[in-house]
Length: 160
Image 1 (cartoon, one colour):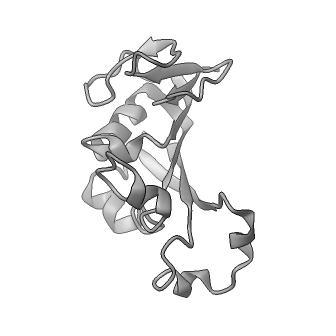
Image 2 (cartoon, one colour):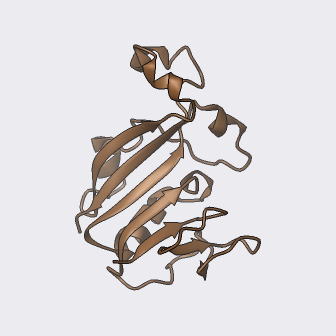
């Protein structure tokens, strides 16, 4: 089972194919994620893990479509990124896209023609400060408390 660590940066994972364009990090495959197609065959990958890379790329929708091409049916694409109201997002040099729990809602999935390729299986908030998970009424407080959320993780199932 092939697993792809997309935009791996310094997070080199043993047993995975580590993909990044930077020359100063250890990789298995060096490729610019803004250049299509990616150097993989159709349906070659079982799991794609994209941590902290999608917010930097020019066209995240096209990236998801390309990852769908190389990921087999019923495979997983996991996207982990800073939440749009997090300190990491607003302070991140180079972030060009923002993500919230509503980014991949049903309307957006249809609008960007992803419904035939992907199904959103889950959304998980990731807290770098564990105490934040105990704050009540986060759904409402997020409007007032910038930085309430740290990261967000989406898990997609490839359905093509």
